Length: 117
Length: 142
Image 1 (spheres, each protein chain N blue to C red):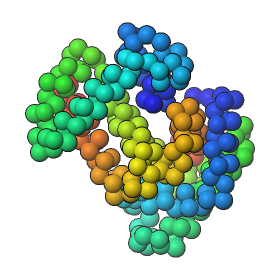
Image 2: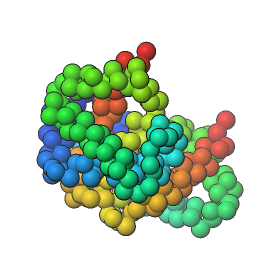
Image 3: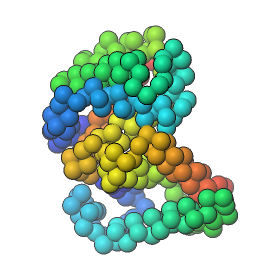
Image 4: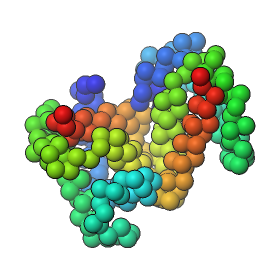
């Protein structure tokens, strides 16, 4: 969804092959694999909520020094993740749930941007 | 950022599905916004913030009506919302960042209530539409 809703985010994925249409993006195996990577990383965050800075220290350096990703993109990804969760959980994704998750994605984005220089 | 023909079709289609529940969508959008982004409450210090408050319902109805109006005049959102644009510029002066927050909450409401309708393509169109509305409402700020 990130690549479809905010197409400029495709700039980081030149080697992903065909991203020319929503259908191509949805069916793209590299997109799927990367989505799995990202969500797994989110899982790590949740297991280490008291220690996010350390948990994401290396990833932060990576995103700055090697990947050159503008931290604004972490915010965009977070917002998209919220929408996906909302669609998945429906009514169970209560306002309180949304508020908590918005805080979580904000904190993760902050941790990922922390080592930028 | 321009709304394509496809975008307009997608947005109209989605709002057709929302139909008469628009008022509820509006109220829930505000409720979520106040809970998720507490700083947005600063514009509503005079409101009763309890769940289901008449003021939140009433204001949700207004917000929904404005969105519906924009959809019905999607080829000229600036024209359709001209008075609202003046109001926000001269009187309300809501900081522009808040329209994105409102937009995010509206998207969440659509997602929770209509997951099947919010395909990635429709999601993209709706996001663009909400951006366009926010831009119109802040267009005369300076």
